[in-house]
Length: 227
Image (cartoon, rainbow, N blue to C red):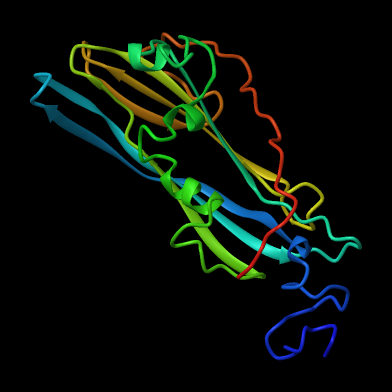
């Protein structure tokens, strides 16, 4: 009873080594799956600017789990998420933030607070709804929705490199998962193309060479606190 903080029917200890709620670091995050889905062509009008836009909308769906870390002392740690983009041309709004043409830039950080693409990941990392009630162990999902587009009359090649990584040293089946994709948009001739893969063929025949994306293992929080 002392070990379970007088709550033997509430606290869990499947490994027989640590009392999870009393040691939040005993829980760590695993990436269970990631997929790019629901790719659709979109158009929209910006009446204020007097421009028509075209492009795609897609979802990056990531499955995560919190698992018991049986190590002594427990290591704990959270998953990380990285989203890099490389484009043949970059709008002034992104250039002002450090993005350059034909170079990988950290789209996840740049978009934070400026778009809803990473809103669910921000909610997860900040333990905001609907992720404020998670318990360990648990399974859950996080989605990132992106609608990359350009104005009619413009053309652009845009490459995506998206990676989810399990917590370091966490007893996970998968260390990480990565998705690559390439979007090609052109007005003359009209091209609205989206292809998966690191070396997806560009239908215009004019590809861009961005090199390897600069993925990095970001520091992982030491553990979780459950209320």
